[in-house]
Image (cartoon, rainbow, N blue to C red):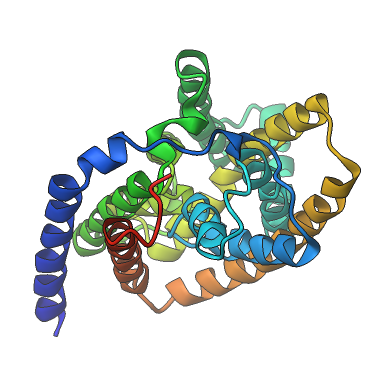
Length: 320
């Protein structure tokens, strides 16, 4: 059965990747995303709750919240909610992960402070904290690089539906390989600072819309020999600084440009909705990965990408 699953995955993945690369590169590269997608677009309370649900459920599952926040409202006919809205409601997800891991974070902070005071630089909590810090540096570096040299990155073809679909398919291939090749021999107590840096480099892939920060770090963790639950748990902790910084930067920009009174309430509701559903997703995923593999997410990402490309090809979706 395992061999059959592997064979079907290889066949379908190869076929999907071939179709993605061969049939759609012109559409993907020639896409002209809607330039109004940068700000917080007008929406009602119900739409904000639904988008908060989408953000919360998909942020920590390895299926890309950015992709779903772009695709779902477009499919529902609401249009792109805007890059700023997408980044700001991620603050709800950060609130959820802080809430869920509060005791772990306090132990790490207090343990690190004690270790520094005692000059115990081999302390586990201190090494874990340094691993998170080191793992955050790459995405900050490459994020600033993109902001400096590609100022209109959010309106580039790489954020089009076609590009997101291709990214989803490629990441399904990588996660499938990681699931097959990963040894899954190391638990949370065996994490090192090098793990933080390597997973941080994997996290940089999430700068490409559709890749998924959780997906890229979970994939990296499995390749590094971590247990599934360990890779997911460390991924969540590693994501706290990166997602917080992204959300705060967008919030600062939005407040600097001014926010209409009618847009404030939906934005707040979206953040609260994202926080509630993010907490549920974190707890559910960690429980799931204790006994199950990531194959359900692999197949989902593959199908998600193929369906988007098919819809674009059939003219049902605009590649924007």
